[in-house]
Image (cartoon, rainbow, N blue to C red; front, side):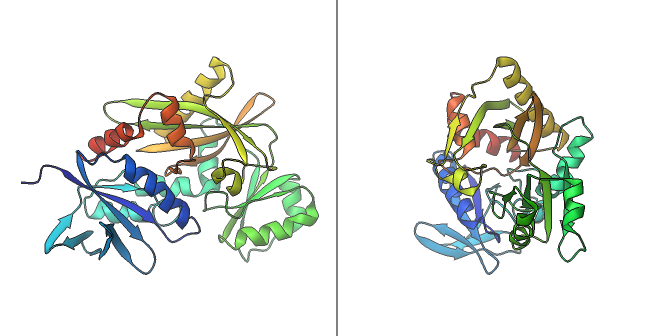
Length: 326
């Protein structure tokens, strides 16, 4: 009789964020309570899906998402997804697991695909009186002119892949002469590119997790990048940005950001842990992006916010597993 749940921690993926995902998985794996669960690291790439366990590698049977260990078939009771990018952040993996009736840690396939599409998600949220920056979506091989982009957004602006994360392929454009190069860079990561008006202000981020037993809105983090903007280097190199948790802002503004994060969580029908990024200019709060599978490395915001809240990451992970695997 099985007394402990088998947990698949799914990492890797098919995008440029593979290494970020693996680093996140290492931190989460350590936080999964081994006294309560049997935990297995599942690493997936386009070529193969494998379980890494006790310094051995076992192939996954994609027909039912299982593997064989010492002549015993191991099935999973729950999947914790920590893939940043495709297929774990855009709904593909969620749909696969749903068909197999395996509960998982993130939102469903529809919400995942919506939030993965930055442009569509932000304009969806705009309907709920949430401020977003002016932006334009450009598809690869679509006819466009620099003048048209300038008229819609102006400079300075940000150019970024529409469906990628961790700040890969993002450029800040200060003059029109820089725009085409920035577009080419972003198109090397994605077939759709967002050109967004630059908002000059203070950056903040706030995480949240909700279960049937508890709602946790995490402390707000203030971000002060040493580069011109909060790029990939600043995200994952602790020397390239100052991160202050809790943020040095009023209780009123803190509550506003936390309440808006909670509202966005519910509006997008999220599950598990999410993070919402903000920027404030002239006392106006703008949403930059919603992350439904946020980074969980030792240098990522969520683990630091959990610690600042007085909780342990292990307990938060257990709360999610127990709630969504019922």
